[in-house]
Amino acid sequence: MSGRLLIVLSALALGGCSSSSGVSTGALLGEGQASATAALPSAAPTGDPTSRAFQVGSTAARAVKCGYNFDPVKLRTNFLANEAATVAPTDIPRIEKVYDTAYNGVAKAVAGQANYCSPDKTAEIKTNLTRHLAGDYAPAVVKKQPEQPGWFSNWGGAQDKGPSFGSDNWWEKQNEAVGG
Image (cartoon, rainbow, N blue to C red):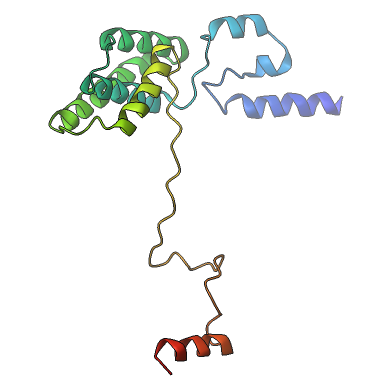
């Protein structure tokens, strides 16, 4: 009995944690699984609605700039239809506004850049546009930039860059540095 109570309490606690993953207390407890999965689109979106709208809108604007042959109006329509199936109806106007703002803002920002469509950028645009045209509206995975050393980057001590301050080896290095 206590095991079932623990499962029910866990399911209730986790039930409100995610609105877009398709996981619900009914799915966890085995209730109504057929109806829960039937209401979801074929590819469950990841990220939040705002980040998806920004990603798809900005990708469409970049693709137009670089001359990709696709229908941006159809992409917008398909994206908004997919979002309408996954979010509350009251959120749709906000998602449309984010999409349109991203599209128009990026289009204006790149309009005057003659060298915008570099090989690296077009490869990234093509990858994202292909995913979006196939119905995958998840935000692109952000590539981790190499860490740039900064003024305080060595604080915390994980990096070993020589002898520790004040040691005999440190004083020898200092003498060598000043020519002594």
